[in-house]
Amino acid sequence: MAHRYLFEQMVRRELRQKYRGSALGVLWYLINPLVLMGAYYLMFGVIFDQASEPDYPLFLLVGLVVWVFFNQAVMSAAPSLLDQGVLIRKARFPREIIPASVVSVQLVTFLALIALLAPITIAIRGTLDVALLLLPFVLACLFAFILGLAFAVSILHAYFRDVAPILSAALLPWFFLSPIFFRPQSITEQATARFVLEWVNPIAPYIGAIRDVIYGGVVPSAPQLTYVVVMAAVVLAGGHRLFRRLQGELAVVV
Image (cartoon, rainbow, N blue to C red; front, side, top):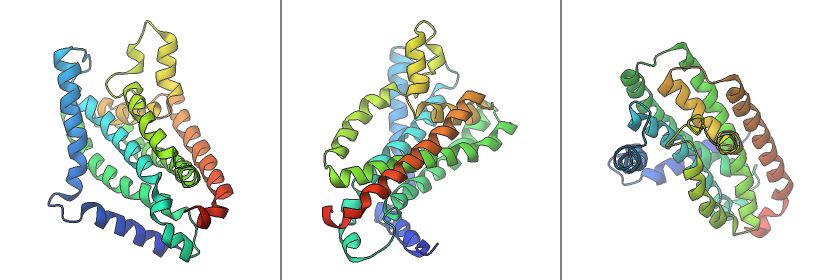
């Protein structure tokens, strides 16, 4: 890669800035899902007692960690081109490096959390199984899916400054409609709702597949694995194509 050094330096700088002056560093990234897990466990597992899953806090935490990666990466990518406007105007380099570096920073912290969470969950749940070999593959598909979205939202926000606020507003209901607190399969009486939550929501199969491997110790279903692969390929290719098509005037609009 001719611009590999630039990409590495941008990732290093983002990581340094993210945790500059922090005593706990990447562990702060764990606080958000832990606090959310405590709040939602209190709400759904204690007050309303809707938790039908064993070791429900772990069930919650696996879903929350995936969601936080998705949410943080997409929201950080949206203004990334505007944040690097000076560099874009002064230097010639592949502009894709900017959103890719932002997503890579979030990936580093996400993988650190998975490295902490997975052994604990596997030890408590007893889910050490050959299915665990699929985890790197599913995580790679998740990264490709988020990277494609990052390309799209970053270039669109550079031209239309309402994209990031709209995305921020959309992510809140999206969060509650994602299978973080429940399994879509548990909605047995509403087939349409179950289908929408499980297959129309694009982040749902990724949450389900990662949870199946770590929390359940089972291989995700063939339709689920097919979905995560195809969706990752389509979104990555579509996001990158949109980025390439619109990047010609970036130096003007940023």
